[in-house]
Picture 1: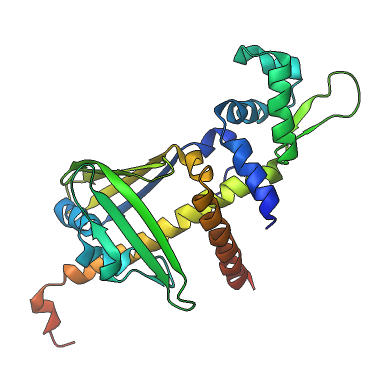
Picture 2: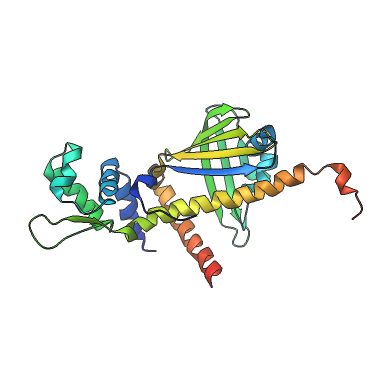
Length: 116
Length: 150
C-alpha cells in the first residue's frame, strides 16, 4: 500500500464536510453547485474540499463542460473500509478466543472426571 | 458479512457477539487482566498479563501491549475509561478520540449479548501514531489475506 495515498485518504476523511460530500456522491454524480447547496458554504470553499478529495483518489471530476460533475471513486474508499474490516477482524478473533475461554471457565468439575 | 463502501458508515462501527455465559462473567472477562490475557490478542498475537493495565474507574487507564507470536513485534494501545457500570456498560476513549462503548445485555437464557459501538472512528486517522500503526496493521492484514487466499 502506498503510504502517501493512505495519508491523503485519511486526511481527506478526517473532515466532516468532506465525509458529507462523499455521502451525497454515493447517490450519484453532482456538480459543485449541487454539492454547495446543503452546506451553506461558498463555491471556492467547496472547491477546496473537492480538490482534497480528488487528490486523495476519493472522487474524480468530469473533464468536459463547465460543470465538471463529481463522481465517487469507490476504490479510494477501500483504505477506510479496509481499516474498518481489519478492526472487525481483530474483534472477531478476540471474541472467538473469549468464547473458548468462557467455555473453559464454565466446565464443571464433574464433567472433567467423567469416563468417556 | 459484506464490506460496504458507503461513506455514511465510516463514522461509526458496531460489533455484536453473543456468548454462552452469564453477564457478570463476561463483564469480568473484559475488565480483569487474568481473563484478558486469554483472549485480548487476535490470532497469532498474545497479550502477556504483565502487559495489561486495568485501572477500573472513570478516568482510569486501560493499557495493553500485544505481542506478535512470530516476530515479537509489539502493538501498544491505550484508553481511558469513561463509563463503568458493572455488569452492563463499559466504555473507554482512545487518545485519538475514538470511543469504544460496550453494552452487556442479559438475554435471559444464560447467554449474554455484547454490543461494541465505536464512534468518532475517523479520529483514529488523525494521529500520526495511529496512522503508523494502521499502516503496519494493513500491511499485516494484507499478508494475512494473502495466506488465506493462496
